[in-house]
Image 1: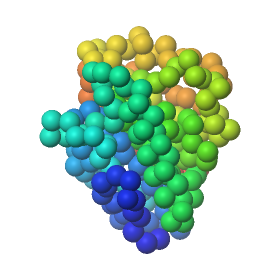
Image 2: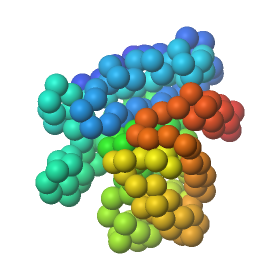
Image 3: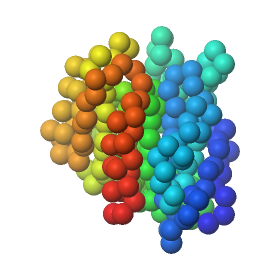
Length: 214
């Protein structure tokens, strides 16, 4: 597989240290004010030698970092714009020979919202969606907005019981709603605020490892 690329967003492609017969790729969406550089630790911390990474910057500048949408104003136009960029990115990756089933999405906070929003609507079967400390946009549009592949996609979402930015009760209700629609969604809670814990990362690692073996 040649080096993967896109012209839609600034990116860093980190190929697997020990690739398998088919490339497996984790596309990573950062949170508000962060950047792709904020997730350069993932390959070493996850330690999954057969997994490649595609880190991207969100499209909007935000106080030295980047943003996927206007968090303080009208978020709708930005979410829809960023969704189309992400869906285009997924097409770019498959056009370069990557199987959609070998693509997993990971997002934190705003990035979690975007991973779910685009992943649940994507016109292709993905290898999985993992979202941390986020929420669901356009809740009233589901289940009609679900793609034909959404119920076949493995999903893991995690959230902090003490999250001061995104109340646990709101996110938990949204994930239960999606479970009730027949989605294969696993929900894990942690005694944390708006961050990622080492033990949480352990669970994410094992969940991704299971997807790589599927």
